[in-house]
Length: 237
Image (tube, rainbow, N blue to C red; front, side, top):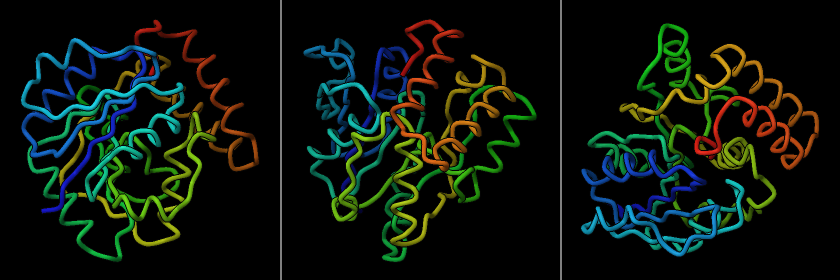
């Protein structure tokens, strides 16, 4: 099995990070790289996980910038980018190894399984089993070979938002995007902030603007302006 470095970009999301670290305890991960968008020297949660190889790193805020900073120091053959509210299940590492063993696969990820929710969220989870520009996003846990990422020669700092859309498009040009047989449980909190269908409308609106040429920086400001109106700062990440 190839080694795996997990990269976790966070911003004021300590409660969710604690849950993710507990979930990763059950997986043979080589290292966990937490990239914080706040300037903090370390984190008290790490004292609760003495068996994990955790690397704490700070970075300028912005998911693309933070992910790039984590990948830069990763030492494993494979990199797995996880959001703090994801909860990988046992065997997830084997799925990554199986999918990336195929040279035709440029990137692997997981169908969603929301930890709470009703029929609408179940439908969205079902659609996430398909790969397309509107069904594959970063909360599905992008996994890829580090040398392949380096060959993309992407400047992720240009993407404080929609870095996942840009990454998927870049990897799709180089091979197949494969979905795992296991799901990746995640929080429904982003849907709970605005409501399920209002959230989807907002997401589609932002994607359309991006495809029409609006910069990710402009869209990032718009996205968080709406989010701040409906959630406390502790939920913003």
